[in-house]
Amino acid sequence: MGVAGCGKSSLGAALAAAEHLPLIEGDDHHSAASRDKMSQGIALTDADRQGWLQTLGRLLAEHPTGVVLTCSALKKAYRDQLRLACPGLRFAFLDIGREEAQRRVSARASHFFSSSLVDSQFATLESPVGEAGVLRLDALQALSALQGQTSAWLNDAARQTDSHTKDCA
Image (cartoon, rainbow, N blue to C red; front, side, top):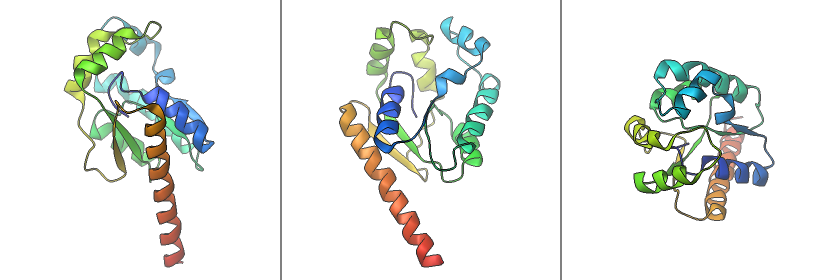
C-alpha cells in the first residue's frame, strides 16, 4: 500500500511470485468513471472509492489461503474496511517522499493516473505506521530487498500464528 508511484505493482508482482500466491492488481478494479476522473486529474472521493473497496474486500475473501493485493489504502478507514473482509490482513507500506513519487508517476507512459494527483495522494494519506499488521518499507530500496524484507516479515508472522495456534490447542 501507499501513494501513487511508490512501487506497489512492482513489489506486489515480486512478492506474489516469491510466495507462490495469486496477485490482485487493485488498479484493475477501478470503475470506468473513476479511471476517467483520475486520467483528467480529478481526485477520487470516499464515495468513488466505496465500490472499489467492496470489490477488493470480496476478492480478498475469495482467497482464504492467501493472496497479494496492490491497493493504495490511503486512509485508515479504507484499511479497516479491507480488514473486515479479511481478518488478519497485513499491509506492507511503501513509504516514499513526494518528490520521488512525482518523478516516478511522471515517468509512467501508459498509466491512467495523472501525475497532477500526486499531491492529493499525500494529502489523503493517513500513515499506517503504528497500526497492527503493518510493515513500513523504504520505497527507495531495491525491489529485491523490499521483496525479501516483506517475505521474511510475512513468513515470521505465519510462524508466530502457527506457534500460537499450537499453544492454544
